[in-house]
Image (cartoon, rainbow, N blue to C red; front, side, top):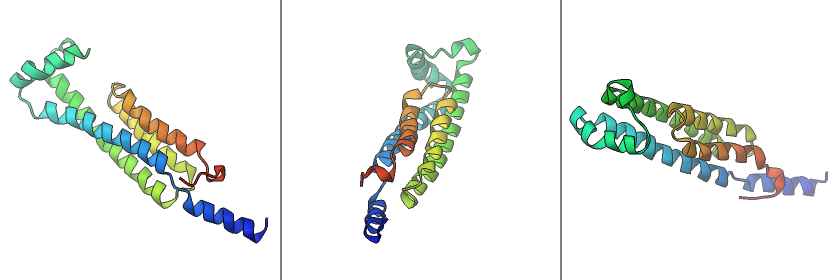
Length: 154
């Protein structure tokens, strides 16, 4: 390779960013924060009477019947705790992924962090928020599929 070709290749690598990957992961993290965090906050900030009046009927209409477990209020609080804990895991793993995507955009292995965030979202919500986890899996797949050699500067 000539010096001119190497200089053009280095300039293309400097311009290469992971903007689509970061936006896709950002959508997933935002939805996880709204849905997981919102559910955890709503359930943990209500009393048993408020839960029975407002949240339990909404859960039943969504197809989640917690009455089979005996005490629906305690079951919902346990589910909310799982949602909150998995949200922390999603945020931590995604934060590492965003940091590495910004600092080392040429490194495709950064996608593993977003895959981990997607798995934490998927299993932490007991497969309920699989559409949200899809965005994180898509970001991980984009890290694997897009390479700086494809010539895309964005």
